[in-house]
Length: 49
Image (cartoon, rainbow, N blue to C red):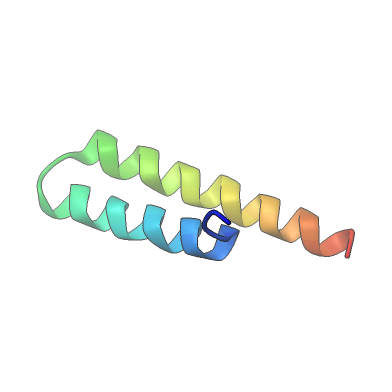
């Protein structure tokens, strides 16, 4: 099985921080957006369980 939503959120946040510390603001913002969307998806999924 692939990674869980929680694992994907953590990975996106870690990638965002990596990009930020390496001076890639656009990459940071993109990973933060992905993490936000995954957090929203996680919240929606909890509504239906």
